[in-house]
Amino acid sequence: MINLIDHIKLPFRKDKELYSSLYRILGFYPHHIALYRQALAHSSSAIRSKNGKKINNERLEFLGDAIIEAVTSDIVFHHFEQKREGFLTTTRSKLVQRNTLNRLAEEVGLDKLVHSNGHTTGHNSYISGNAFEALVGAIYLDRGYKYCMWFLRRRIIAEHLNLYKVANKEVNFKSKLLEWAQKNKLQTDFALETPPQKNGEPLTFHSEVIIEGIVCGKGNGYSKKESQQKAAREALHRLRHEKEHLNAVLKSKEKRTAIEEEIISLPPKTDCDTVTAKSRKPRRHSSAPKREPGMEKKEEQQRQNRSKTETEEKGRPAPNAKTQKNTAAKKQSSKEDIIAEAESKAFAKQEEYAV
Image (cartoon, helix red, strand yellow):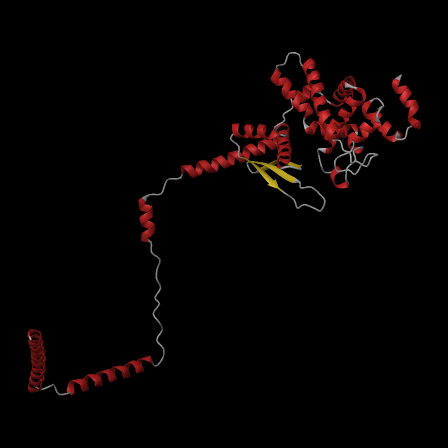
């Protein structure tokens, strides 16, 4: 009955297109449309209030985050009656994580209603999820907690989520993959590539999972972690569902281990091998210079000149014995004179001091 009255009022409303779009998402018509308009305004948008103040959905996002956690806690608690606290906490965290909320916002068409600048809408993967939280905050202020519970239970979880699948969902795909690879002794690497950034576009990352030299998964994301998680998820899916791919990885491992075992089985080097290697000296080629023509005549001339010089030196007369004696006597007398002169000077100085 209430929706019928709101439907009758729709043609006379100012923002009838926004009312109709929200009705398709919520299942009821809003009462205070300003709250929902604020919930759809991202902080990068240029929307302002009547007073000229810039508005955004950050405050409603804060409120909606708390309400979503409270509602999902209630739903999980009653749905899994036999499960313990740890299981309930993990399941709730899977329901309220950013990727899940972002996917739900896109499935219900909320991402098409968000206002933001042109560069951010298509690239920031968190805008839609944040708007979803802000929408729940607007519902709480507009209609109360019961409508929030009804919207999340009937319009979201019942139509877009399977609680059992979410509870059994593997969140940390990278950790699961590394654990499996370590258990099976497989060499696993994550190759990261950052493509060049274009003007006005955010930085993106591309990751590949390489197991035993084979690319098993690829993933793109706006962070290193996101790209690696997507690559690991694809790798796990292929290894579990594609037997040919798994067999190729195992064969590659067998080849690697066979080569390693062959290297280990090789005999070690001995001292005899070292001595033999040292004793093998390379042959040396003769490097004697070639004799030029006419060199023999020049050498013969040089030998003749040397022989003439030697004969001339032999023909010179040897010094006389008398001459040698006179020279020695002169040297001896000169030494005696020097000594005598020095003694006379010394005696003279002694006489002066005595006076």
